[in-house]
Image 1: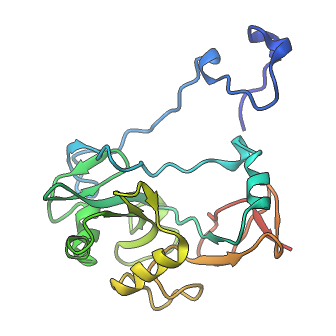
Image 2 (image 1 turned 30 degrees about the vertical axis):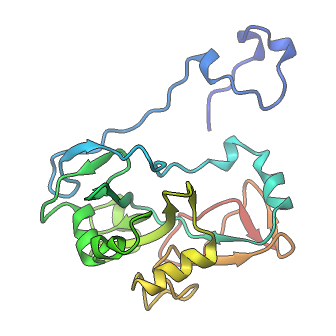
Length: 231
C-alpha cells in the first residue's frame, strides 16, 4: 500500500534516518470520509467531540514497525478481535450525558445507532456512578460495514474504558471487571465473559510477532487485530 518515490524528492534526503516522519514535507493529508450526518442510522451532530477524551484512533502497525520491539519487550499483553463497525464514545461532559461518533456528539433520538446503544446498555446509568470514566467501543449492526458478524440488532464491543481524571485507559483486569460488573456481557462470547471485544490472551513467550500475521479466531469475521500469529 502506498506510492513509492525516490528519496531525492526530499530536501536533505542524504541525511534522513530510517523512520523519519516526512508527512509535512510531502504535504500528505489523511483522508477522512465524511460521516453521513442527518441520516436516520447515524443521526445529527449537535456539538464537537469532547476535548478531554482521545478519539478512537489506533496506530497502524505497518506504518510504525518499530513498535514491534516495544511489544516484544513488554510484559504480558492481550490481543482483541478488531470488530468491523463504527466507533462510539459514551461519557458525561459536566452534567450532560453524551453519545458520540468518532468526531461528534450526537443529537438524542430514537433512530440513530449511538443512542440506541446507549439506551440498550443503560450507559447513562452506568456512568452516573462512574463520572470519571468514558466507555469506548465498536458498534456493529445491520447496515454498518456489511454487518460481517451477521447481527440482528446493534451490539457494542467495548475496547476501552478511559479514566478521565487520570488521563489513561484502565488496564485489562480493571477494564474486564468494569464490563462484567456493569452488565456489559455477551453470553455467546467464548474468549471472555465481559461484553468487551473478544480477547485472545498472550505473552511475548507464547506468541510470534509479525507485521504480516493474521489471526482468524472467528468464522464470522475476517478483520482482526494484527500483527500476531500463533507460534
